[in-house]
Every structure is written in C-alpha cells, then in structure tokens.
Amino acid sequence: MSQHDDRFHLLIVSHSYPTIFHSLSGIFWQQQARYFSKTGIKVGIIAIVPISALSFFKKSLFWKKEIKHTHGIDEYIICYPNIPFLHFLVSYVALWKGRSLFKAYLKKHGKPDIVHLHRYEAGLLALSIKNHYSIPVVLTEHSSRFLYRQLSAKERDIAKNVFAGVDYRMAVSPSLCKQLGTDFHVDFHYLPNTVNDHQFISDVSTKKESRFTFFSAGNLGKNKNHTLLIDAFRSFQIEFPDSQLIIAGDGPLKSKLLKKIKALGLLNKISLVGQLSPSEMIQWNNKSHVFVVSSIKETFSVVLIEAMSCGLPVISTSCGGPESIITKDFLGELTDHTMEGLLEAMKQVYLNYTTYSPAEIIKFVHENYSEEVILEKVMEIYKQLV
Image 1 (cartoon, rainbow, N blue to C red):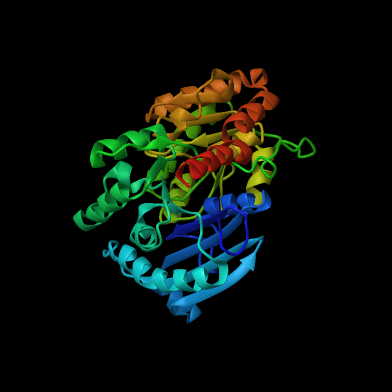
Image 2 (image 1 turned 90 degrees about the vertical axis):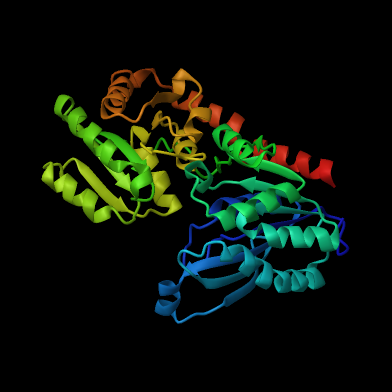
C-alpha cells in the first residue's frame, strides 16, 4: 500500500484528459477516477495531453502544466502542441515529460499500488514506471483507430511493445478485443465503459417534445455517418410527418450537413444543435423519444448507454460496440448500414413505441454498465495483480 497512508493507491496514466482546451477529452476516465475517490481509494492522474498548435497560439500557452487537487483526485497534467502526421511522437513526449511528473508525484504522494493506463499512447511512460518501481500496469484500450487500422508502422511497434509489457489488457467491446487479439497476438478481456446512472436519469418532470423526436449525438465527421441518418429520416417523415430529428455535436462536416438539410427542405424538421454539455445531453435525452447511432464503426458508444439510462429505446447500426449493448429486444433495434435498414428500424420503434418500458431499460443499464458494477470488477483485477 502507499507509503503515505494505508489506502489502496491508484494512479491513472493517459494521453487525454479534460483541459481548458477540450473539456470533454478523456472525461470517461476522469469520471471513473472521481467514483473511485468517493469509495475511499487514493487516486492520482498523470496526463500528457497533445493539443493542436492552433489552440496554443490562440491562448498563447505553451507546455502548460497544472498540478491540482480536485474532487479528491491529485491531477498532474501537461498540455503540449501536437505535430500533425507524427502521431507516434505522442508516446515519446509522454515518456519524456511524464517521467519528471511522476517523480514529482512520487515525492509528494508516495508509490502507487497500481497504474491504470487508458489507451496505449502513454504506454511507454506506464512501462517505465513499471520497470523502475515494480508497479503492475493495467491497460484499457478504447481507440477506434485499431478498428480502422489507422496506425502507422511506428505507432504499431509502440502499441505492440505496450500490449506485451502490461500485466492485464482490457478493451471496451468484444469487437475491439477480437481485432486487437488478431492484430497483436495477445489476449484482451472485455470490460465495457461505465455510465453515471446517478446523473443520466429519466426525469418524469421533463416533458417529451410534442413531435416524435429522434435524437443523435456525436462528432460531425465521416464516421458518425449523419448523412445516412438524414436520408433515412427524410423518408420516415414523409410517412410520419409529426416527427423531428435533433443532431448534437460539432465537427468538420457541419456546413455540409446543414447544406444538405436545406437542400432537402427539412430545416423545420432537422436541427443541428451544436456541442452539448452533459446537463444539456440529459435534457435532450429526456425530451426525446428515441436515440439513434448511425456510425460506421464504434469501439463502444457511451452516448448509447447514457440515453438508455434515461429510459430511451435506441436504434443503432451494427458498427462494433453497440452489438454488445443492444442484446435484448426490449432495448431497441440493430440494423445494417443501408438507408432502407435504418428507415425500417425507425418505423419499428415508432410503431411499437408504447411497448418499450423505460423502467426495464434503466434497470438493464444499471445491472450491466453502472459505475458500481463495472468498477467493482476493475477493483477485483487490481487486487489480483497487487
């Protein structure tokens, strides 16, 4: 146990974390850390976060370092300007700057019992800590870049070394486990992301929109496949005109999607509402009738279980992660990546809407994805390794 007190001491290492540049980056492991801290575990964070050079110039900040104690967590964070097309440098920068951060952390807080690495990019730092201080390392891999096989040869070499060197490997969906196992010849164990179902809750005081509302949220980029969703909804609203589609998020395709919506004459039916805060996401989940994921690939899909924790039935394309979530008929519909398939799924949920039980959907989420359930499993892994 920690030399400073007798509590179990967890150190989380990552290359992404919420900062003044991106408030939602790495928010899932920040939420995990806060939950662990509430249970009495001593929790620290070391995050070496790459940020676009443009963001740094706008804020006139370079190699910004923060050391703070918030929500019971000791956070050691460095932000630095990223170099486009040289993603493999992230791992070496994390190693270079992370070593000094860890020494400062060690001096003040003592030796952690275990290191939990989120994504391989900061893995060289995690392995350095393991080798110099004999601390076991657990990895959770989240990145969809493995599903697309987008890593360069140098990145693959780093990932291979990290995967071989850690003590326990997890991934957030069965499809990602399978892909990683095939490509790197090591075993990965499935453990899904969590949802804060004390925050994302069904609020009966919130009135549903007067029109039947499909809600979708995510980066407005190619992978989220919003063009497919818009095309499917266009056909849906012809047959069921008292309906609307709300799309939350921001990204490179925003202007293109808006142009398409205008061209189809659907500005009164489809709304792009921009990037939403967690509280705004909860409000829209509670105001909507159905949540839709139209992605090409997803390693998990946290927004899907957040919507389900508010009692919404869901629709998703078969894109990786959602297949391990929508496993019961009472949760919603899985479909293929065709406009016809997505349209049919939307019709099925609409026509059978009264048969979906919000209470049953919420219960399913709590039993399978709540922080209490998932992090209890993580804690068992920690204890076995320590």
